[in-house]
Image 1 (tube, rainbow, N blue to C red):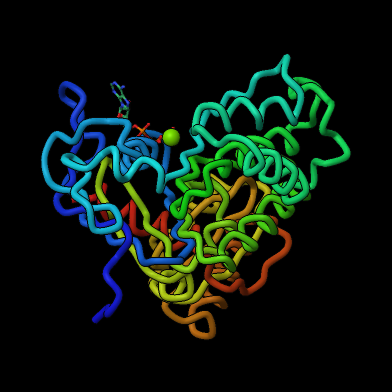
Image 2 (cartoon, rainbow, N blue to C red):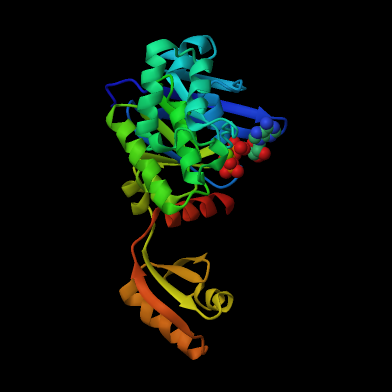
Length: 312
Ligand SMILES: Nc1ncnc2c1ncn2[C@@H]1O[C@H](COP(=O)(O)OP(=O)(O)OP(=O)(O)O)[C@@H](O)[C@H]1O
Ligand SMILES: [Mg+2]
């Protein structure tokens, strides 16, 4: 169906560490110029996937093509195409913003006038020009992430692999970081990004959910949201354990998920079932607040999918 060949294509891609199949038979095509989000719980295989894509790990089984080249036989051709930002990206704390960029320019052999121009442009791009002489160690967390991204861009890669680049960063800085990603997206860069934040997954053109090394689902965010079966109501009961027990086996209740103190109850029909839920809680003397209908979210779809895989 796709006329343009994918920029990354894996077939049965597998990486094992002793007994663990960290990435297990992954078939995934990344389209040219898309922002692809990789999500999944701890240990799902996101980092391993990105490291395989970056050519930093050997493949155990399967194949991987990047920009049409077989990664196992053309690693040197592919390397310049890729910018990889590791989950624990380390900047040199003692070096300034400008010096860090110069350091990465050295590594990637970016020299002379090109280098001067690029360091200047990337500092502006990452909104860091006014901090160019500040040591990396003295930047805020958000600024450090932007500097790390700028360093990843020094050789102008056309594929960016970003492993949780915004984890632990405040919401305002996360938004700024995404503004920069949007600019890169507009220039045609392909971006593969892993993230624990569902609002970020929502901003991707497509999202892949990984679990135990496998790709559980891969689709556009709105399609994934649509997979949530039934309708959702949320409420904050005084005792969520007791409430869950009371309502999870009522007729028409498909699933109950807990988010902190809030319960999300999936019903086959809110109109038909909600009165029964309310009556049940009332009879049991359970107090609750904030009962309302909620639009299905991606997180709920993911939790449902993963639960479905765990139960036989
Ligand atoms: N170098 C390694 N040696 C042994 N096992 C490893 C190695 N790297 C990863 N693993 C295992 O492979 C599995 C996948 O790990 P990976 O780091 O890819 O997950 P992740 O989805 O990135 O998790 P997180 O969200 O915690 O970053 C885990 O079970 C992990 O323990
Ligand atoms: Mg990881």
